[in-house]
Image (cartoon, rainbow, N blue to C red; front, side):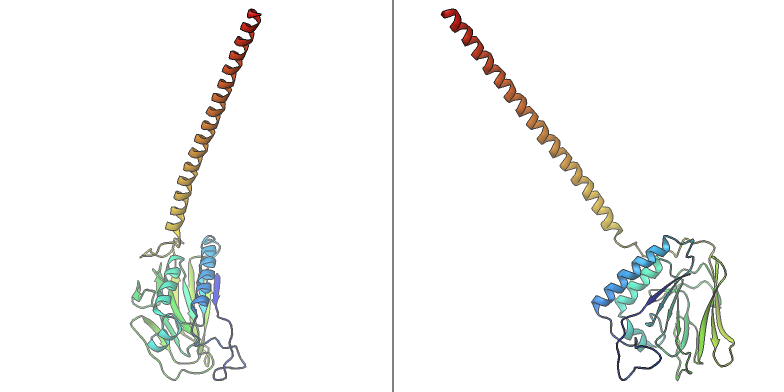
Amino acid sequence: FFFLMIRRPPRSTQSRSSAASDVYKRQVLSDTLYARIVYWLRFDLYRANMQRTKYPWIVVLSNQPIYFSDDFYERYYFTRQQRIQLQKLFQGYTVDLYIAGGISQYERTYPIYKDVVRNNDPSGKTFSNPKSTIYITESNSGQDAQSASNSYFTCRYDMAAGFGMIVGRGSHSLTYQHYDSKFSKIIDEVEIYKSNLNGFPNFDYQPPNNNNSNFFWIFFGILLVIITIIVIVVIYKKRKQSAQKYSNASGNLEDVQVVYHLSLIHI
């Protein structure tokens, strides 16, 4: 497994502080902080994918849900542009699960990308080579939710207090289980199978900075050729000038010798 935890710096608030943990909820992300998160996330996801045989499963943990059936919470944490950008990263680097907290309710989505469900199992219990990330909100371990909601992308939701467990069975099988805290029984379970580690379909994702990188190397190569030609031309001209000066100097010396001999004869 390769786990990534997205957490913002703690900030105490009187209205939502608690002895159990620092407060990470409902704080608006500044552009600077968000840019730092994306930079770090892209780097670590790239590093994990370079060792995909070592890390066949990638799970991103956060306190901020990206998909949640209540529109208020869904909009409150990330802007739409931020949600799309993060999903592009997850799709491109094949993030299997995104597990979020922040809301006292359990909810699991179908594999989804940019608001389009990429489902290959109507029952929602088993996904063989899923085409996108599955998003899970798991944050009602302390008490039952007061209300519940679901959306077109919701595969399963529950109001009872519970907790989640990830069970890995090698590089080709993973199970996520949601338990009822009171009775310690499984309420929801999803199994993911992967026959290969090639990643999700590339719907519209392009690896970051590929075009810029190619353009840079093409430009660098052309510039290097131009500089080499200029250096060769300059060296050639200098050598030609030196040869011409040497030739002129030799001619003048011969003239002097002729005059000298003529002078001796005259004497």
